[in-house]
Image (tube, rainbow, N blue to C red; front, side, top):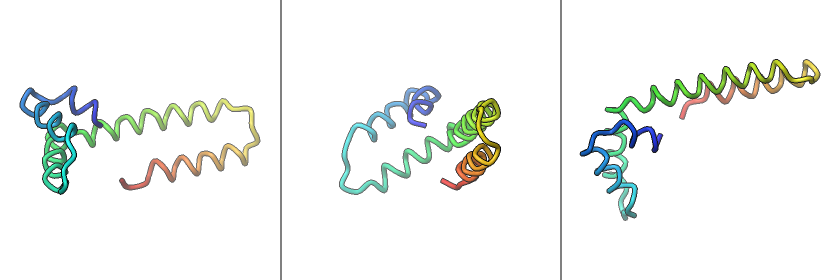
Length: 88
């Protein structure tokens, strides 16, 4: 998220991100709101979801190639499904 935001941000947003990420604040509410606003503007959530889907698909493909008992791979698939469906 952090690196993608810097990659996509314009000069002004890059300055704001650098400012808020390089300092420690007693009250982080403003920092959180500014960074969330920039992340939303840059569609960082969509980029993150795309990466999650890509890595999940790759993991399922690799899991299918494992030489392991079916019950073991099914358990691993269930854990992966739980992880990918969680809210964050």
